[in-house]
Amino acid sequence: MLSTVGGHHDQDRPMPKATMTDWNVVSVEEVAPEVRTGEKSLHRVLEEHAGKRTKFVLPEGRYRLDGRFEHNDCEAIAVVGDPHATLVVTDPDQQYGLDVGGGWGATPENSAESVEIRNLTFDMTADGVGSQAVSARASHDLKIEDVRVDGECAAADKGALGAIYAAVTHPDGKGIVSVSLPDGCEFRPDTYPDQSAVESQTSHPIGISVTDDHRGELTFRDCHVEGWVNNGGYLAGGEGPCIVEGGIWTNNGNANLRLGKDDVAHDVRIEMDEIEYTGCGLWLQEGNVRVSGGEISLPNCDNDGLRVSSESAQIRDLQIDCESSARAIKVNDGGGSVLLDGVELDDWGDGSKHGYCAEIWREGTTLRNCRLAFHSGEKNRNGINLVAPRIVFDGVTATHDADDRTTVLVKGDHVELLNSTFRGRVDVDRKNAKSPRFENDDFTDCECVGFDY
View 1 (cartoon, rainbow, N blue to C red):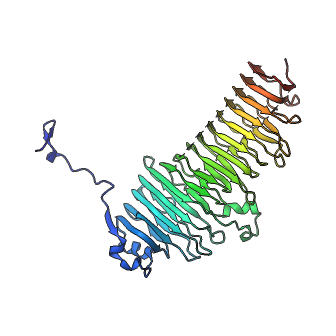
View 2 (tube, rainbow, N blue to C red):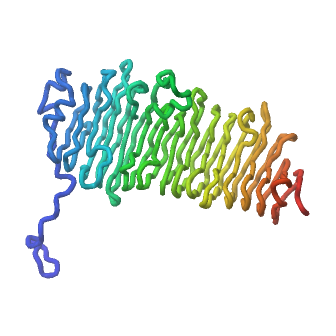
View 3 (spheres, rainbow, N blue to C red):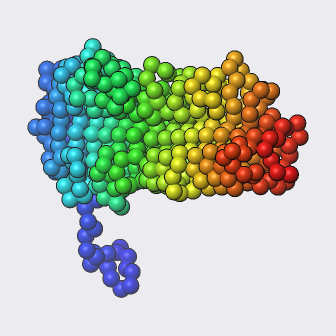
């Protein structure tokens, strides 16, 4: 029996627009049994059967991927393992794997509406292999989920790209990326004799890259990205926001995680235990960036743990542990506001690279409810250097347990120390700064130099 709403029968309503589930499903083993035996490369099968809205289903097994599958002139494309499939690349000269949904500089009009790459492992363990795994763009619905790349990427000498490139090209579109890239890439500075080793890092592969045509929203959920010399996650590309939910980002050069305009990171875990190439932990590069929760561990590195260069930033409830010569926190100069709220820092750094564990160069930076603990070690260093004017401490506990080092150095005018506790030494550089304003502070067992009482 037909139901009625407002006097109209259901059968009188217009048919709904086709949904994203209207796939032409192609079972790879049915259309090309020889792909299961290795007699035919998977990319050939995909090329032969790809249409406007094609979902390729790959049963459990291993499939040769001897060339690039490029499919951009379509409405929707999907390649999924059922439940999981392995794509094997063995040719050292191969540069690309699955390149779908739209080319470089894609717009909503010339990119696929929907792209799914799911339940796949890319086996690149053969000697010299360094192919890109996935490059995918979609205007409204992008899914790169349960994708893993095995094998160290050896691509420095052949126009290095990276493992995963992604973009959502329409401002209203959304996507999700959940990948594991645990083996990173070779560090081959000898490939670039005209560059220093540090300069050559940008010519090496990237783990995850958000391309400049990104306009929608991308969520990166529980990714594992380790050992990529030219950034682990370069998410600062494009205009659309990226949301990072959890994940492990370890020993990636330039930056383990690099965020840009309106990007957000929740509960990320970052570790840098590598000095062969240089990389900071979390780099807030541009726009307004927000960070909440998570931890940065710096057992052995010589670059910044948290670097803030963005127009503005809010960092809340972040734990930083530093045992190296790295600068644990650096807030660069800039025009917008920066708030560190509930940040906890424990530093045992040796001071061989940086005399201060943390430096604040931006006027108007606020530290609220933070705990900054500087510990004596093999080579003690100083605590935090307040270079810019109008920095505010509110509810901060700052301590140093080395007798011969400074907890806080004030080098900027109009600094305010409010409701805070200090131990060790607080030093005002009176050649460069006036005495700070202080209120409701605890200076017990603290040496104060340069204050106007």
